[in-house]
Image (cartoon, rainbow, N blue to C red; front, side, top):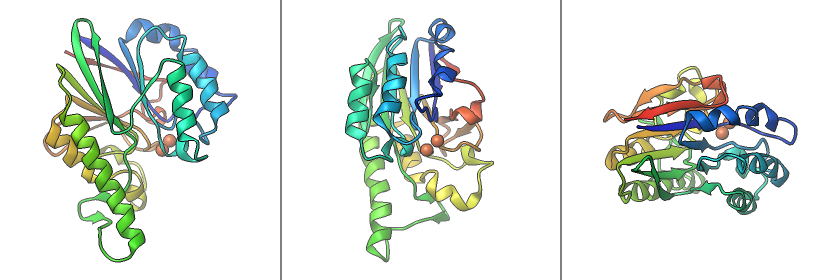
Length: 236
Ligand SMILES: [Fe+2]
Ligand SMILES: [Fe+2]
């Protein structure tokens, strides 16, 4: 049995970290691993990430993260990644890691992901260069993620994202903004690689539970959705 604590969209600034960190003592007894699904900071500022990273370092369980669009806002992604890594957090971006938990191998592939929309209501690689670049960015990202997921060699395989791969977990959001909340390219990547479960954030007004077309469970763990600092999921 593997117990996974997951959450996203912490949006931590210099003053709000305590809201999250005060749950750490119980978290360490309830879970074997913490997954962070992006938007860890409010504006992608190094000081915000340092505040969070100092708290994460106190956790005795492994912490694995992807970044979100808010973390990209100040164009300091490399520095933010380094801050997390310096405090023991594994940061993934179209990359993966495998760890041993309770005698089982657990592989995690992570990506921020991107937008683009969902079948029947999406952008296309057609027309203006700007539109082509938008969709090509999403497509390439999904293909890289697919390769990373497919190469995992572990008993449990987890996909960790910020943007959503499906529209089901967006229900509650305005339909007009679905193309900015996720893209079906990533569901295709996930269904190709068949991980055990998928976690994402980003859709604050969405819902927690959904599945890809082939039935891979997808969980939107944005804190405003799960209404708690984190949720614990059991893989058995
Ligand atoms: Fe967010
Ligand atoms: Fe976001």
